[in-house]
Each structure stands twice: as structure tokens, then as C-alpha cells.
Length: 450
Image (cartoon, rainbow, N blue to C red):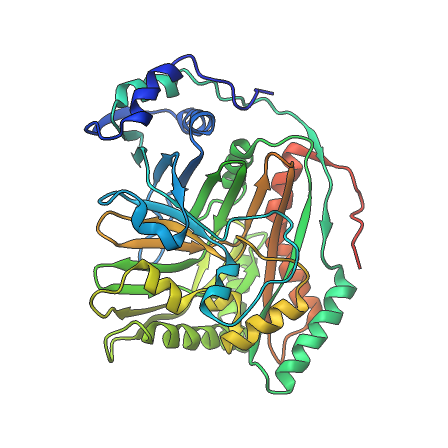
């Protein structure tokens, strides 16, 4: 294994770049090979406290996926101090689900599996944008950076470590909590709630870059990203957009409705048809669409909220999802912070009505969501932004060698506990497969806590 924190021989050349970013930035085009991105991420891990690599994996998505771009920097602030970052530069960051407590009279009492900052944003000292086999590296001294990246050795040895794994619920404990939530629906307290469970454990070693790249191979997604905040890493394989602003247009794309991929084209087509015709899945999706229409109306010019697509069926490598698109035209002067304050968190991760569901989530879930079901994204220099919902994603603390991830599904009046539990296992399967690529499970079978 390579040693983390090893100083690149060319690092001394980089001090002028980091110390004096007032130097004029220049952009250097580079022809790259597939291993170059691994080298870039390992190099950045050695020299930057914060970075984020966004990779749409070449996937088509309604209204586009993430840009293929990398940002790295050494100074970060929380969301309340966003204006302290340099003007005229992108801002990249993460918002924890627990930020909800700042917008509503709510709380988060559970202990975190991994302690995550509530919000964290940085501006880049180095930017790399990708187009095919070409990378455009922007920095004060791009030639020096390019040479340092090219000299970085990306370790691809297939090391096998060990890991432990626990989950907050087995099938029976999940069913008990499911019944309690469903009773609230029958009592008229809520219509639908996204109930989540978590998986967590310890690792014998941590290599977040290799883990993320393998996760991309197992589950390429349009909102894939690797985010670093010192010793915390978020490996994100999200299919779901939270908010995208382009000019005065703001849109959201909630996901509700899932089915596995078929083992052959005929079964796959049948499963897609089953999802599209499912009254239960359509009802779940429609409730969240209505919730998002209400959220966007708090920011919109009168009469501009519309549903651009309802019940769209989109397939990914491991799963097929039902996705709808809701958009509006913003009132003048609405920026990122106000858009977040009026819509956060994503309705698909709470339920309807939103505030009551968040109260019940706190009552019935057994873990602090943290970054899970929050959002991750970037704000460009013009103020436009794009951010995804943090799902199908693993949070790793390299210093403590711990990790966690959450999965969930929607409980409705006609939902079945066994089916919803299977959906949670399906959503967890890709992350567990990726862990199994690098590690041998020590606690086999898993000792499920009660």
C-alpha cells in the first residue's frame, strides 16, 4: 500500500501557487489516459485539504448531468459565510441533512456514525475540466501541476483488507418500525414517509480514491462525485438531482419508484413496464411532485411552476427509477442560499407533509443522517448551480477508519414491509459489493443490532 501523506518531490514547486493565488491563472490543455484521473486524485489527496471530482460517466439525463470537472482548494467556510470565499470563482460544497434544523423547529438527537460538518464550501485553487481525452488544467502555474500529477504513482494493486459491518435493522426490526410509521398514515398524520436504515462499520485500511473509482465501475451514475474534507470522504453514486439553476430557471427532479434490472432484455422490459404501471409507485411519485411544486412556489414568479415530465422511467446499471421534473422561473435576486432555505431537504428523502415527516423520521430512525440525504454540488461564478441528493453514497473517516451509508424507501398506506425492506437491500447492494472488492467481511454473518 502507498503511504498517505507522502510528499511529492515537486511539492516545493507548488508552494508559490498555493501561497499567492493572486498570480494570473492560465489554462493548459492536456491529452490524458484513463489512469491520469487516478493520478490526479491521489496527487490532490496529498496536497489539498478539500477537493471534489464530479463525473457524469457520459450518461444522458433529462436537463443534463453533472459537469465532468475537478476542483481543489485549501480554505473552506460554512454556508453562512459563503461570501467570504473569493468573488468570481466557483464554490463547491456539501450540506448535511441536519441543516433542516436551521430552517424549521426541528432537531437531530441521534449520535452520528461519522461526524460530518453541517455545511462546508470551498473555492478552487486548481480546476480541471474534461472533454473526451483532453483535460484543461487551470492554475497559476499549470505546467508545474501537470508535471507533478504525471509523476504521481497511482497504486492499483489489489490489496485485500478486512471490514466489519452492522445494520440498524434486520427484516423483523424493520417491520416493527414500518408498522408504526404506517399507523401514522392510517391515522391521517402523514401521507407518505421516507424511512431509512443505515449500515456502518470499521475498515482495516482506507483508500477512498480507489474505493470511489471502483464504485464508479460498479455503478456509474449521472451525479457521481468524490468529495474530500480533510479526513472525511464522500463517495457518491447518486442518480438524483436536487436543484439546478440556470439563469432564472430552477428545476428539481425527485425520484420515487424503483425496480431492479432484469437478467435479460425481456425481463428488463417487463420490470420497466411493471414500474410504469404501478399505481403505488405513481402515487408515491406524485405526492413528492406536489410537495416540490409547493416548495418551488415559494421562490417562483406567479404562474411559472410546472411539471416538465411526470413518471419518466430511466434505467441505470443496477436499478431502474421513476423520475419526474418540476421547474419554475425564479423571482429576481434569488440566489443559492435562499433557494436552499426554501426547499431543503429534498422531498423524496422526507415525505409529505414535509415537516411532520421530518419529526417522525427523528422519532423512528436510529441514526443521524449527516451527509446522507443532504446535497452536494457546485455554484459557478455567475451564480448558477447544480446539486444532487446524497444517496447511494458512502461516507468514510480515514483517520478513524470508520464508514457509514444510509438507504431508504417510501412507506405509504398500501406499502408492504417485506417489499420495502428488499428495496433497501437492493439500494445497499452496490456499496456492499464495492466494499467486498477490497475487503473480507470479518463479521459473517452480519450481527444485526436490535
